[in-house]
Image (cartoon, rainbow, N blue to C red; front, side, top):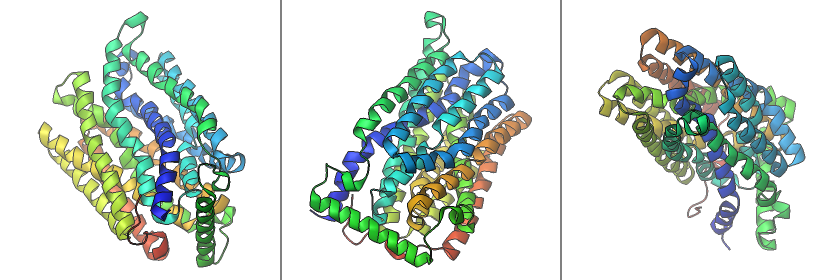
Length: 435
């Protein structure tokens, strides 16, 4: 059996349940933006207060990322990911109980604490199974859960708003309850469907296990030899390399989080109904899914990961500036589609870099720290955009703010690729290999 066949077998076994989990996570995180179409008026939530509510989620999320990922590395992925999903599902559904701005802040903070560690935990888990040459497309397949969730979840959430008044509840309350429960159900199943380590993978033949274990071990030795050290955890967490990755990711999460949080409200002035707005809001996410798949595969097959990163950021920059400058609805929507292609497309390409440079427990801590520090943007960014909207009456200034984040990521990535560029071996598979 060829390498590509083994990797395809791994993909079919591991990715569906992980993508499903991330799919649910994105819906439960982003449905705040849809609920806001009616919830803000019901609870008297201003644009600034809504921005703060979106930000509050990320405070405990950032603080608990590294401890959560270290616990996952210690106790195993299956049970820790299950714990995360069950707790966040319960809290997501409990958003239906909020009654004012402070209670919404508390609910968002608890959700952030519950979900902390899921995304970097899965990223670390995938590094334990897939050789570096294939990780661009594997990360693309996993992170495709973001636009897929938004493509499906955005109009679904809009339809749930139509349950207004059923059994005495608002539509946004039904939205939270119905979309929170799937996380609990999948969390219960995860320990039984997610395998532990390659050494114990019964779905692989002995020959396949040997190839996989030896390949991953060889790559780990090569990374350690190239760096001249074993990537000790404390050294990694305090290294300039990890900090610079976090700066780059800070810009990326500004883009991703803001698009998914504010897109329905950006489109609301088009004069459509709430349901129609949520269906139109799904269109840019479709372009984001295409961007993920196209740019992830381009990075792996050509080995031009740097080119793919810059291309994605340049596309997002053009789209954001265009969306800010044009007020004609169809042109603004087209520019937001361009933005989504680049914003979502950059994510899997980016994660191919730190996963190629870090190893062992240090990889778990380093990946989590990059994700945590990068997500500080999601504490600051929604509040900034909300304040700009409060002052100007539109989101155009916020879109230009996000364009500046594209430039910040470009600068940080330039430093990373100049000082710590990974070896060619970790950037692309050999000719003919594919998933």
